[in-house]
Image 1 (cartoon, each protein chain N blue to C red):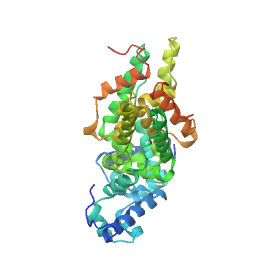
Image 2: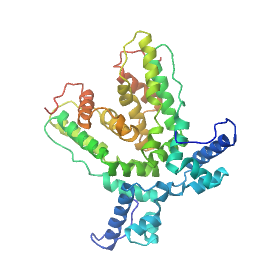
Image 3: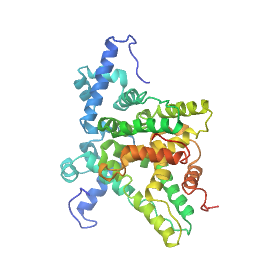
Image 4: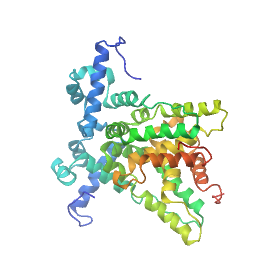
Length: 194
Length: 194
């Protein structure tokens, strides 16, 4: 987190942060051109001085990293249904729904465009979510794949489709795609949701 | 392709196109901030009038789409070694090397930031490269996976890593990772390069 400033929740500093984050999210969702997403434009939308934004975040890239981290951290609940297959399917379904949301996708694209730090903020939480799901299964005495195998087998294909496949060229509906990816990952051996 | 203009190769129109493409690629590789990659800045770097750039490409997003399409189309040779595993491994190795190149990755990030059209231009050619590899194997009488399975199993993990995993957190060296992904895709049944 590169943000500094006041720590009183609900204080002026928190209000500035909320309005600036909201301004960035709104501008990106409205399809602002990347070259028009400048600190003066963001400050004007948020109703704060540009110098405040420069002082606190330094650059649009750092600001996008903060907004993406806030938006994508803790956004998906780690399910605990009692079966690994069903947990993975529910979790991946939430991720896929998030990626299908135009505003989330626009924020992710803008963050990737801003550079590595902001890009990585978009997926920062995903590995610990996977680790949580696998830990539940381990405690139930089940065999589990590696976290990396879940990233490669389920997460990566969902992100690749969201970023690089035009909407009209996508194959199966998100829930069918998620189910197929989880089934393939688990070798068809684990029961999925009926 | 949204570009219009002269068709004489080597003519003025082709020279303008080359300088403008080069200016975009250079600015992105130099780490220009997204909000500073404007048409006047690009035009100044290319030594052409801004109005020429506006007239021909319309926006930074369309220009990035054209540059990405030019850069990433035909950039990887479809190999024909006589074995599916070796062909896939060589092709995916080329893709991984491309993704490990900081200038290519910077152009890809900027293109994704510019929106769907420019983002999709970064991978436009990949499906037909995969189809070419699979066709060679089919002609040799071998069994082949679906193009989608190769995208999900090999391409998506490589792009996910390049975009979302910080360099210092990456696991195995690119060539080992490529080999493992291809082996997993083919179920270990196909011989890979020794």
